[in-house]
Image (cartoon, rainbow, N blue to C red):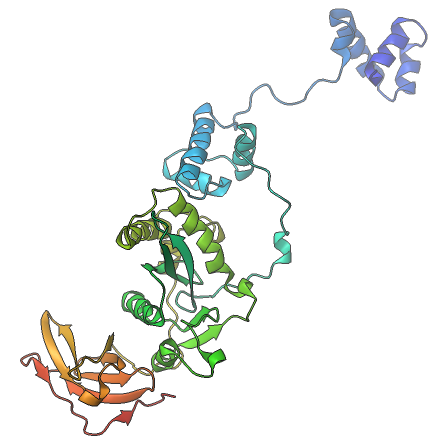
Length: 392
């Protein structure tokens, strides 16, 4: 029995006076008189403590907003997208609705039964968070496995900017090879500039250092002045951003019909890349999209670039006739490298006047060619193979 009830009963049964009851139960005489009035009007139930909450709240989320929060949760989850309170708040704002506090959105989701309890996670305060200060300061890369509709194994190769989480490239392969790493990296540099550094694990497509040598990617980076960083073996947390990104990517793919061919999977990845970069708020970016964050800050540059100025890079193999072909200003040109270099993997670096062809596995300059738009064949201006300055 509550204190209010006991005090009132003591008075109405004349066991205690109002003054004595107020002193004994630690309340003022005025309050006890109010309780007696409520008792005479409504009985003992009326003396129980009443809620102090206002009958109406001008800040309470409207029914329209509450319904939209529930709809967004279901729609985003069904599409394999992030559907947390912060993301829902972002979508409400972009739809012209007044978004309530994130805690209110979370409470609405709980009330609707749309939150599944998870095992207790490690507290965020225990993590040491690293983030590059500028776009292009560090590019992370990794690949993850996926399956086509008929069960065929495929692999998805991703390049992610560490500062902004901007998805620079995502491509489908069966499987990922060292050539794919070089080709996708160079394609990303054509579109976004050359990064100051890369961060990957120790997979053979990224490094051959544990095999006593170097691979094409390891020869390429010093030519561009890019610092190569590799995580410690058995410590994937170093590449935590891209490891976590794989979950987001796979959740999105799983919400769609399985791709029948590798080309179908690539189409899905192209759609995902656009949505992820430009139409999805990122919680680590305080509600900004990766595309907005990537473009908001000046890009970092390689600290020791070997090829200053404007240039273009082409990754290729010398053909069986000792030549390579490249297109410039809509016209195909043929460059003689030398029959003794047949099959050699090369980098062709083009500036405004010259094409320099470098053997990727040694860093040697195999040929130089003066750009002449009027001619189809550009001869080798170099008599003897040399070594590219600064190559290892």
